[in-house]
Length: 445
Image (tube, rainbow, N blue to C red):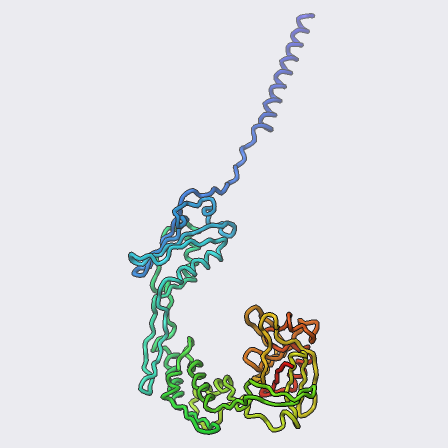
């Protein structure tokens, strides 16, 4: 090989080596020298105790902390970041002290902001306190003595719960409660326009004088008695203490009412039967009279009248020549409704459940009132009905759309809570024809 050829071969070799090195350097920078990727920020479980202090000057100090009452730090369930309250179950210990006395020391388990709010409200509401009281008037010496409003020391627990939740999220260490903001206040003082009007309304009531004409006597209700019943509601409107007013009406009814101890009639089967018990006779309608009496007092009426009667004696011929009553044969599970001697409707029914002691009671009663689209509730039931006609305390006639069958022996093991369950058409027919005071007779063969 000539010298010239050797030089050319050497130059080619050097070129290839240089080109290869350049290519390697280029590939390295493009594929292996990428900028580093930022690692994702990972939430870390806190491993230290957190405590929030709440102070109300002269009232109490409280702490809300992540330690249980046993003193164990429950990191595994407590201290995921506070902004994840919607997802994490945890326990918070709430300790409240007044002076040297511990008022509350309890642990609440919460799953979200709502359960935390409820827990705070429940615990702090239990602190002994005096609730705010509006200005009021005491009836004494036949006039109303004024008393100024009292603000008391009842916490606004709704506001406090919001403050605590905000503090937990920002890891605030202390909340100082402001007396003017953090506590509930009375709404009306003696100088408010509402209170001044209320006093005028109370004094108007004192003009009332209600004289009742009873069967054997006359009873007059004067301000010396009903003045003690008067009070103001939360909106400063006059209210009559219904318990005291009803006590007066009941005592009047005790003197006036006459209850027929038994009645005799011929059943639809043609059997002559005597029924004991019930409430037929002269009977004051207690609840209608209560409503009317309260109106009379609030309007300051001077009036002489009879009380409102639910039943004013038994009409002549109602059990024979002018039959007008609802007849219920519990044994036969049958109902008949007669009006002015005419049979309006006959129907199968379901009465009270015998197997659990809810049997419908025997007796002769009268319908107290009628109500459309009523809701009946009691132990173990809350039911809406279209037609409701009560006649014996909570026992009444009503439709029962949930029943597919009536009559027979259903009542023995699957009856009502004591009421008379009726097919819809039966209930509608009776409702449209009967009036309050209508007689209902219940009996067994």
